[in-house]
Image 1 (cartoon, helix red, strand yellow):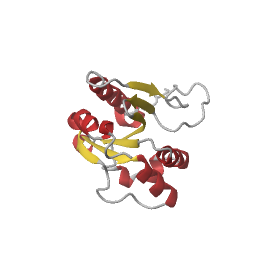
Image 2 (image 1 turned 90 degrees about the vertical axis):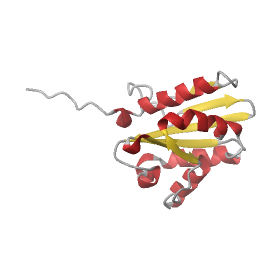
Image 3 (image 1 turned 90 degrees about the horizontal axis):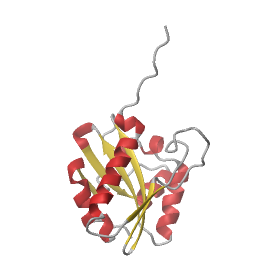
Image 4 (image 1 turned 135 degrees about the vertical axis):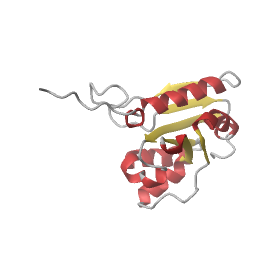
Amino acid sequence: MTSLPKQKSRTQDGKWFEAKYVDAVAVIGKKVPVSNIRLYDTTSAGGGAFIPEVDGDFITAFPGGALLVECKSSEKHESLRSCLSANVSTGQAASHRLWHRTGNPCIFLFYTEIGDMVECWHGFTVGTHRAEGKPLPKEGWLFRCKLSEMTELLKNTVFSLSICR
């Protein structure tokens, strides 16, 4: 008897949290013009063909700039701090540092099933700490909130550009 492959949880797959980000941008887009562009790699394209690693999951353009976004999620880690080297590649780290140096904001959004929490990290902070092999600073996120509060905090912080430059 052949067993079925184990189904991935919503956070192992990652697409579930990426969809939550897309939903948040759609809500923000009702008040502010935005364009959300999906960047496809092998995993997000379905794994059928090899597509090289890309800088992030999305580029979200809005008045005043363009935002590079990488979404991460976990069912067992409480914070991106505890799984940085396992979940952020050196290529992604380099891309976020470069994106920041060009004057554009970049973020890592991390969702944990533990407490239904979201952390928003500055991409330059994540990229630099990953490259140097250092842990992320304790409470060094831009914000940490319940998933239900993510849209409002993105709108009032990240999309205002005040904390991402």
